[in-house]
Length: 93
Length: 93
Image (cartoon, rainbow over all chains, first blue to last red; front, side):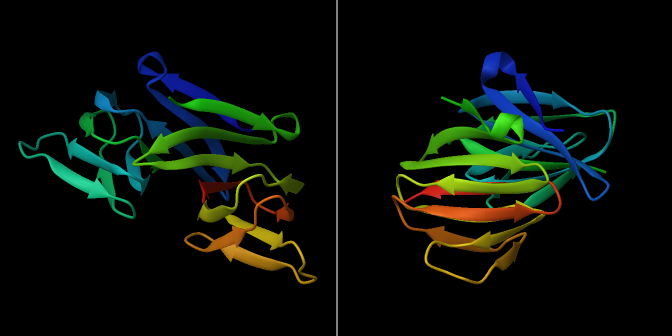
């Protein structure tokens, strides 16, 4: 089953799906700044574009480009700056 | 602007977007068999899962896994068999 999700007044849209036992979503973020909360731990992979991210407990921002991944602990939050519309894959771990 | 699209009674869903001058979409295909028509030429990249594809003018089916890409000419059509729900990136060339 494919599930449409929408966040931040439609500035972030995603499609949730399950494949081979993995719970995932792919999505696109429009230009902007966002703070996402996590329930499960997540692995985020940039598919196209770039995300500049501040992970929980970090003071530095780091930029991830297409093909790069980062992991976020569960029950936490991370901040994202998006300078160009960016597509991502999220694997719930 | 992020645009939700839906094909084949919701078995294929995608989100269209533009980034850095490129017109793109990301999407997910549920298990099934599909035939897609193209207007512009397209480059399809498998993000997660696998697509078994028959390109226009080909007799053989070929399987593309995560990270693999294939190109489809404009004004044509290609057939896809999907054995596991699969996420893809489509770049309109």
